[in-house]
Amino acid sequence: MAHGHQSKEKVVFVGDSRIRKPDPNKPAPPDYTAYPGKSEAFIPNFLLKEWMAGVVVLVGFLVLTIAEPAPLGYPADPLNGSFIPMPDWYFLFIYQLLKYPYTSENYIVLGTIGLPGILFGALFLAPFLDTGKERRFYRRPIASSLMLVTLVASVYLTWVSWHHYTKEVEASGVVPEHIEREEKNRESIEAGKGRFIPGKVVVPALVKPEDEAFSVTMKAQCIACHGTDLEGQAGPMLAGIGDKLSKDEIVNTITNGKGEGMPSFKGTLSDAEIEKVATWLSEQKAAE
Image 1 (cartoon, rainbow, N blue to C red):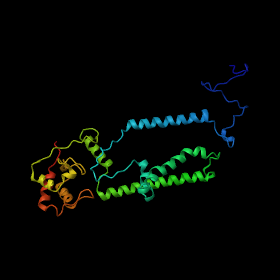
Image 2: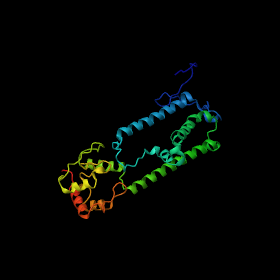
Image 3: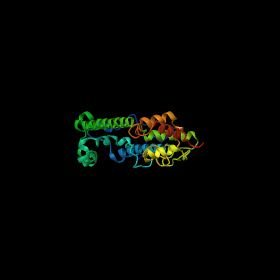
């Protein structure tokens, strides 16, 4: 088979492909690494490889979003005083940074715009400022040191932020929203109702709404947090609470309180009133 300008050139193919067998007498062209200070051509070599890597990442990301639906949170409730705000994990480091004196209060502009602007601006200008040919990190002390300091600071601030959050949750006795959502989702699936959708909670009807215990809850201003129908507002929903807590547990919660959200009613209500309310609440169960 003839090829090229030499009509008598013999071409040997490898297998059934159209890849020519390398000529042992003709050395292979040297790699780019053989030329110090030089790099691979950006177009099309480098750009094509970056595009292929981007396609693989994008396909993997799309598969993940299709396989695992986004976990929707509860609707915002400005009356919920027990709610502890918490951003997504990739913003925890800057969330923690805003808690320090020189990035909050009088310096809030510095913390929210100044520092992030410097960091992202430096990242944007890095290709124009760092034009050296050296790619070994130990030969680039300034860039490597800045990268290491930024990485360590981000990891440390993220850990501190999460540590403070878990301590706040333990001290307040509040069940984190993501855990409550998982438990309700599991209960909903086990009951054959499918995935739990926040904002579409069915409030069980009150059992014995004419009971004298209900007037006691009105007297103690329980409805300010738990709602007029015990559907929950700033505090948790008490309709159907009998399915979750026993009478003794309810007595203990009313008497001693729970965290910062639930105050103690010892001294505010008599033992007989607490017993009456606890008995009535223990009967608040969802209809089968």
